[in-house]
Image (cartoon, rainbow, N blue to C red; front, side, top):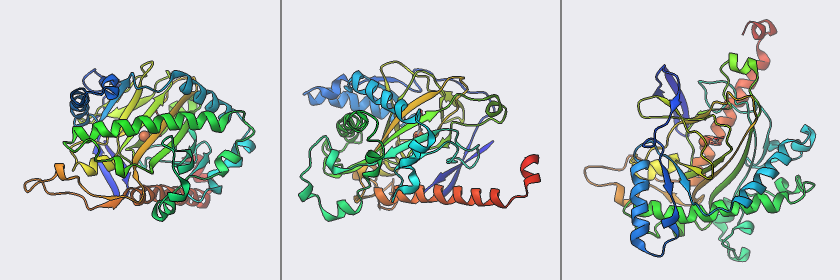
Length: 370
Ligand SMILES: O=C(O)CCC(=O)C(=O)O
Ligand SMILES: [Fe+2]
């Protein structure tokens, strides 16, 4: 079977085997201990970089343990996630994405269809973007460059429309800030892993892509099982890498190089890391931005909290110097991380609008027959 995927530059196709999904092996999605990330010894960090490189060229997915994010901060964020989604619809719609200039806010169930080859996404979600005023590495707001403001996507209505939920903004941003601090450390190890100077990305991640998302997947109904519905369809992530906290329900699957779906089963105390498209571009395809989806067959609700990390949105970047040579010319033109994300978001939005318009035009008899 061929799976169609959306990219900023149009569709790409992947072969998928007919065999049922199976559990992943230790080699396919290893658990990497991040303790050396906090070591003052460069050799320790280089050894970690080597481990990350090995998995990044393979599936592009790994679990991290001893990542340094406080369990209490995670638990508080999860509590706030539930507090938000358990509200009546009119309360959630106070931060509807329709109010956003960009793509922040609430997306109601079945309002996205990330994969053209699969069903509508059953999940609901809320999203917020980087805002210098909440950066855990404090910023002098008067000194933020103009081109950074132009690309700043943080929007206050998300926090204003949730201010009735006690502690929401503080606890959600505490989690987001922890993810951002961890990502800035991790990107230094990625730099080492690509044979770049450890600080290569530092000046490029001062006002980075740092999108926070809460996903809520309702229990799967019999009808959804019958229709082969997905919680979130097959896709790749957009930026450098994603830090994905998932609860213990399961349902995250990744497509390995043979076209076999494998389960990235939850492991207590870990966070999943996966490579995004922009990283794949930067390293001329050496690292893989792997296709994944959420195929929830549980009769219980499932929660996840991804954090998408990328370069400053105004930062234009092509293939990095260490990943190109005379015999390995750059496959990609430089583009800004912001434009890159915008192109794909826009594409998804337009496709969804087209789909809705087609459904509205279709005679009702056809809908019954479908
Ligand atoms: O919910 C999950 O486990 C995955 C979410 C995801 O892939 C995404 O939001 O991009
Ligand atoms: Fe994803």
